[in-house]
Image (cartoon, rainbow, N blue to C red):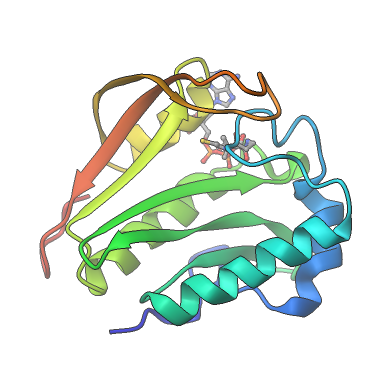
Amino acid sequence: MKAPERIETERLVLRRPRAADAEAIFARYAADAEVTRFVGWPAHRSVADTQAFLASSDAEWARWPAGPYLAHARDGGTLLGSTGLAFETPGRAMTGYVFAQDAWGRGYATEALGAMVDTARAVGVRRLYALCHTGHRPSWHVLEKAGFEREGILRRYCEFPNLQPGEPLDVFCYAIVLSKGTENR
Ligand SMILES: CC(C)(COP(=O)(O)OP(=O)(O)OC[C@H]1O[C@@H](n2cnc3c(N)ncnc32)[C@H](O)[C@@H]1OP(=O)(O)O)[C@@H](O)C(=O)NCCC(=O)NCCS
């Protein structure tokens, strides 16, 4: 079962990225050193990096029930950030989120994550999880607000190429277990 390519929440439109989004993604958040400090991918140096992300997004969407989503403001249509579901098996997926600086602190990440939990449940995900740097409180606080539980620390597990290249760092592993038709949140 495929997830919808467009999802509306109270204030956001979440939709599958397309090739024409490259310039906006690059300009709004993917090249911003502050925004990308705690993400697991290198900050984009040119729009070609963003185009490579869009190609990998299409590959994810072709293979699995969903993939990345872009978050736009319902009011005005500004690109605010990105979230998504990265499938590892039909029943297990990872999620995450990244928002442009001017969109921080308004609850958008929490709203987008809630939609990812609902979407994951609807397409049969049983375990939805996320990894985050142990020092990045805003990120794991968002997960806790959405009902994720901290399972532990994975030591020296993830590289943060914009923070400490070449050095795997400790991360918190957060997960939520989903059962079809049941409200977990
Ligand atoms: C992490 C991020 C997604 C949060 O997005 P957001 O839309 O601001 O999140 P929300 O507004 O939904 O919630 C943030 C929460 O963290 C809290 N918070 C924000 N900054 C904080 C800080 N420096 N210290 C402690 N808490 C903080 C907010 O108060 C809010 O909690 P509250 O609702 O209880 O008040 C956003 O900062 C971001 O995109 N950062 C860059 C990318 C990134 O690091 N992504 C995560 C990679 S794992």
